[in-house]
Image 1: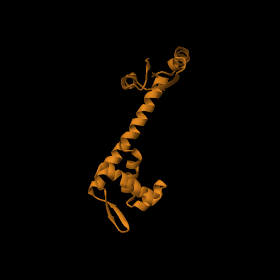
Image 2: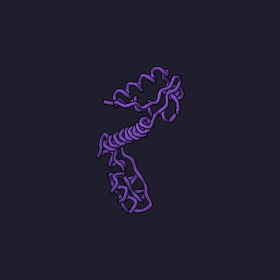
Image 3: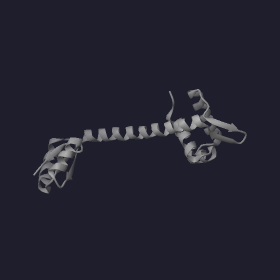
Image 4: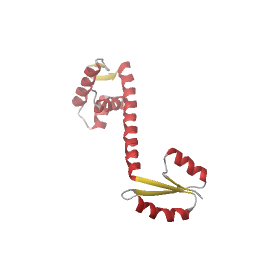
Length: 145
């Protein structure tokens, strides 16, 4: 199984352009970063770099791999955000209204009814906006006019 830190390091090399700049950005020594890239190449079974005496450059396969690495890292961040939002939604009820009076009356009632949950409220201009938010799951209680 490939470790994400290897993909993060490869992506940093691609972004920075040089092993030296990437090692500085990642706060790693150049030899440690070089070893990580050899490990990644061994795991993939392909060469990702053109190596000369004093230079390490991504080859075409390395550039392609760095692009995939960036995408996987974006997906990882998206996954983390969605998981956190899901967990937050399990502990929060959001009341939506287009009139401020029902919110003021309903929040204390919901707080007692939904013990242990946070209650948030959202004021919208129209019932249509509230229905759209309810449909998307952004609010869990609708209090229309």
